[in-house]
Length: 156
Image 1 (cartoon, rainbow, N blue to C red):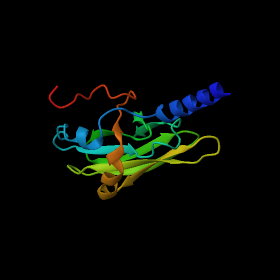
Image 2: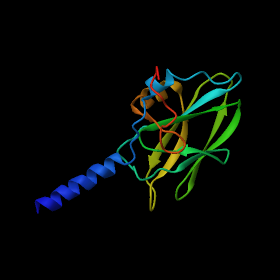
Image 3: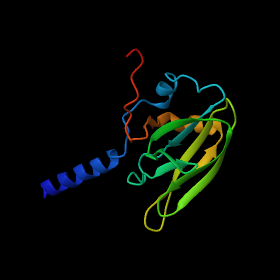
């Protein structure tokens, strides 16, 4: 009986850590970045929840171009010129949001897990900077391929 209990504990532990990124936190990574090119703005995407729906990791699209996976407890970014963009995450249905990028102003998009009929889905929502900076602090970097291979600690 102890073997079965140990096996179940191991499975639960793996399930909770499977979607977690081990990259740098927002403050550390953000301080190492160069600013966006002249005329562009940085758009930060983040999914603050680490525990709920770790298996639900749909691709985030900006104007139908794939950007990265919406992994729990993670963030990523894209530098974009001013304009209006459609943001979309697709699972059992596509949830969309409109983002207006203003030159030299950072924008923040929160990726929130909502319950679905068969599987949860991710809702992109543009949020104010003050709210985003509080929520993104516990998130870790994830790159488009689901890893964080482009990050090197400062000084390396």
